[in-house]
Length: 226
Ligand SMILES: *Cc1c(COP(=O)(O)O)cnc(C)c1O
Image 1 (cartoon, rainbow, N blue to C red):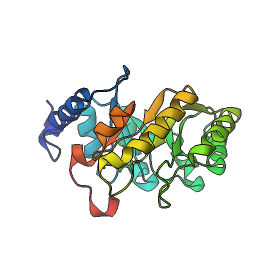
Image 2: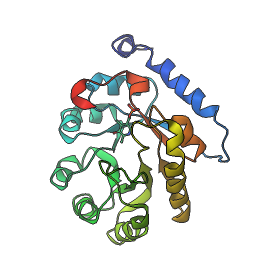
Image 3: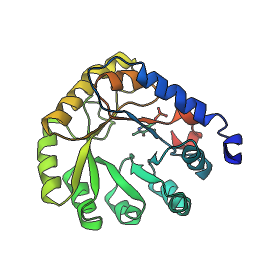
Image 4: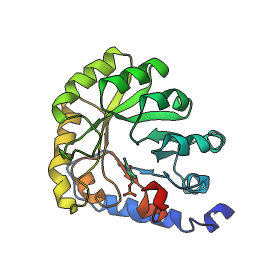
């Protein structure tokens, strides 16, 4: 296609097609589409350019500084950004002009900060359904209260986001993914963001509406950005 796809991320469009084929091959009792969100964290701006050239309109980013350094490019490309990293209150203000979906709302303080700095913003509530202490996300039992609080604060709650268990086979993600899908249904939300390079099929089978894919598209991340 363009010269950019001949560079470091040569073949990205084929790798994207492979992932879409993997998704299409999953047997599932759902009719919704599953979107692939390329995760460009830790890579230079050319990963975002390659994703756009491959037809993607949205990317996922984790690190505030890293994202801010790509702000001009993002604006020029007109690509939407989902913030999927751990969110610190003091970073929200700097990110409001770049982020179009805040995916890691997991506590009252961050919810209030986003509502204050970005009134009416679109958010996902992050759920920790594995119980791993190193993971962000609220307890499944806290989702209802956060949904109420986000609504009262004027935020638009699009859905829920979760991360499968770390260092486990994909089968171990089934139960956590089922828990999150059930909560999406209970609250009649649209987006169920779950599944990464290692557990795409399991997430789709359990009802994911968007998978966040980094290494399976772009290769290993620079060590500074795992
Ligand atoms: C890094 C990251 C991803 C992508 O991970 P891969 O295993 O490289 O596909 C997805 N979601 C979140 C929240 C991440 O931090």
